[in-house]
Image (cartoon, rainbow, N blue to C red; front, side):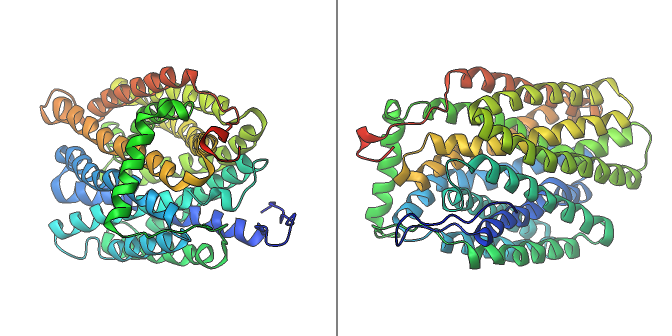
Length: 442
């Protein structure tokens, strides 16, 4: 970690230490173990084993949509609560602990109970990610925000190695035991962030859980959306983000399942397909790590908006090639190249759009605005799997196309969503905002 400690300019100023920066970054690694190991890989395999290949896409899409619907509703309220609280860290701790506890029982209880636990675990993981993102100003300055955020993305994707590695070492025959190992790793690597990240703190805390505070928070969010002209580029960015995260979150969640179907279409057995899926995921992870470090420096050099533009162009090409894999039946090795491109693009999205959102956010409303940021991400996580489930039903369950071909059509639909988001975001800029008209410092 190369982040320097920042010497305070005056007594009582906030000090950013290397240990705080490193601990914040390691939490990115910790929660990625859950997102890759549970959401992207092994839970979809659990469902496939339980309901069969033909029903797996629709079942997983619907379950993911329900979990995201919960956090979609709660995101702005949670963001407003953290703005009123003296510290955000307790929110991060509790959301992480609840997610870990629920993950540890996946597959060990009945199918219905496992579905409920996954829905709640995924919702609390998403809430924790919202609290974590809002702490970015506590461990960075304006000058190094892109670099530190990029390092967080790059190191974070190393958590995917751990998730995949746990599956390789332990095998996927006993999924409940694998879920327990993932839960333990998530918790253990979260502890440094809980202990060593020091927040700037809220100098004017207000009541958090009162009904009046909830009503105030809701009214404030509605007012923000109605008065979007006071926050240049905010609403356009949020709308555009719906569509590109729609596509990206969906492809993350089905990448492993897609690889299984493509592999079996080429004549491999289910076990060989699972091994191929792990290799493809490792390829994507490797290049996501590289992409995080690379794009973080690009953000500091050319700005988050121009960086995001280049990332979305890369996604368009990646989706086109990925669709060709399923529709045209291209050889399996081509998928490794597609996975490499997807990894680089993944590292770029999160390196660019977190700093861009911060540029569009007034200083004293970071929690609320990151709640909106999280809300549109969750909305896309509802609609993306829902769209995927519809395409799967029309193309695969109807018997019209084989699973790999039907999923290829779904990938084309996702590519069109990225094209739409790119068009919407064209007029957004990352120029520094002057918030004096709101009675705040620039």
